[in-house]
Image (cartoon, rainbow, N blue to C red; front, top):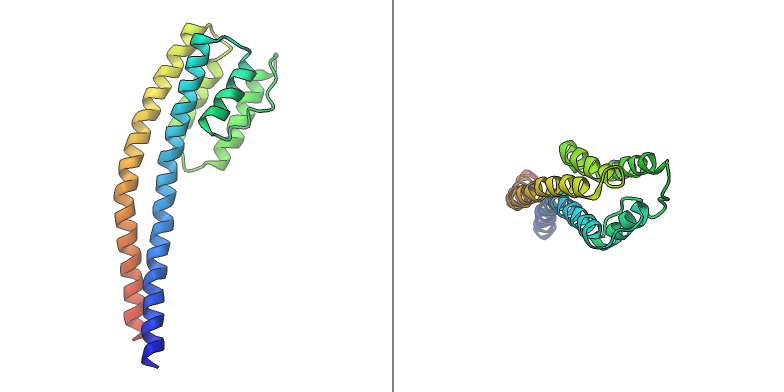
Length: 167
């Protein structure tokens, strides 16, 4: 009987640690996604600088290079392109709700300028948004590291407290 109680206590402690780890992973995922958004903007900027191409193709290529799911693979150049980009970004934003609104807005604004203004102005908007995203990704990575320790400790503590109640 004592063995069963000890095993149950150990499982509660491990479950608490796992729950803490899952919460910490969500925070780390936000940092990784912000960094990937910055890579995407860098890819678009480089494409604008070195190889001018249709906007839809440029965005789809940058999306693939950055490893983001922004739903740009079906875009077609034309008068509806800005509206199509906006819809694709709204869909991606809904899928990645952990990314703060301010970062999404700057990211979207920079992308929407591509193809609507001349290349130097678009590159300037991309560079500004990229700087902001790099700073946000760095801050999110630091916070994720702190949160990882915190959530593991809280999870272990909650599991240990539940185990003590069962003994």
